[in-house]
Image 1 (cartoon, rainbow, N blue to C red):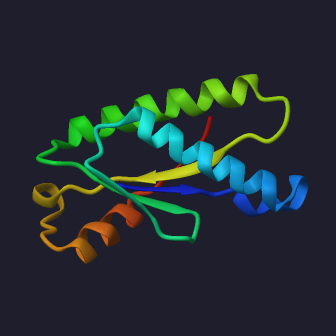
Image 2 (image 1 turned 135 degrees about the horizontal axis):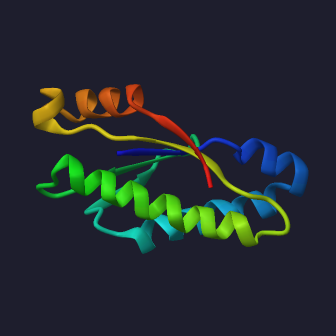
Image 3 (image 1 turned 45 degrees about the vertical axis):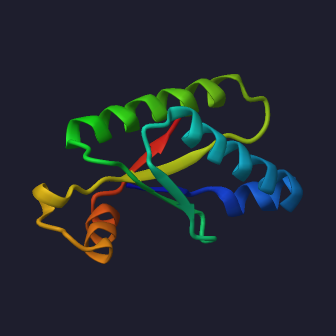
Length: 116
């Protein structure tokens, strides 16, 4: 799974880098709250890369739905900056992807835009 915070540069421009960094940390916190990810990495380019253990596509989609609801609730209550993001999901069996590089490429191809 690849989750990209797509409006981080706009947040940094409008509210400053300190606020942008705080929102980036908070966004990572939402990913941790939604859980089920075995490992989450931040690549430094506004993207978080997460891996599930023995996960079916339905489980990953359920995670994405729950994450979307967390972000939507935050955005609905925020009086300042809100989050816009994309999520891409790939599965080893469904995408015939058995290397990390192939899984990531397929996840990036499947990204869908979400604005809470």
